[in-house]
Image (cartoon, rainbow, N blue to C red; front, side):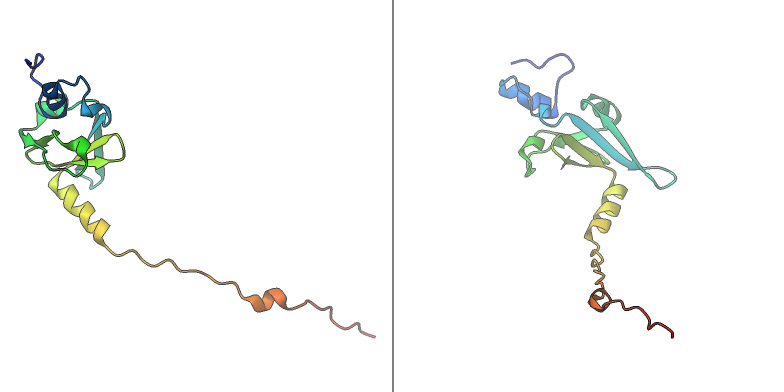
Length: 134
């Protein structure tokens, strides 16, 4: 079966080569790139298809071992970590710096939540009126 014009690679190409007519990308229909801006904030860019990524990044392979079966066949890009699932419909890629930073944050132990107990003595002590002067 010949590839459509432009030659599909990754998810759409794998589904096309299987000939089933349905692409795995339909379940995951958002392609997300997460980078860090010059001010240190995370920059998130979403795309409806992998084509813009294929124009700006060099594809070095396809994912063939993801535990999320919907990611198998997704492109692997030079200088990006991914693909990785994010929710039910997002394929996420991160720069190595973002990946390292977020992984370190994720691995930090969470501070235990402290419960504040209300004193039961004040709640059960009856309030009395002062003795009348007289």
